[in-house]
Length: 103
Image (cartoon, rainbow, N blue to C red):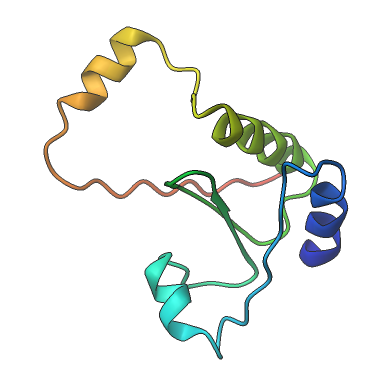
């Protein structure tokens, strides 16, 4: 279901490409991108912004997926200068993980 959805989304614009990988056969690539669950969607632009979706990004999550694709393409997360300045103060790695329930 995830693959079909992403194939349809990537078919909407020549600016979006989709590469499908095998989590087991390409273990090194999965580890490189920090993928430890499947199905996984990794959004990459000119760099890796660390955006990952696990499971099917359907329902409310579909809107978030589309917005994230747009943000990666624009290379702009839409954060204010104040927020960007605060984030620049972080001097050690931080792992954020959001779990979303449709209900």
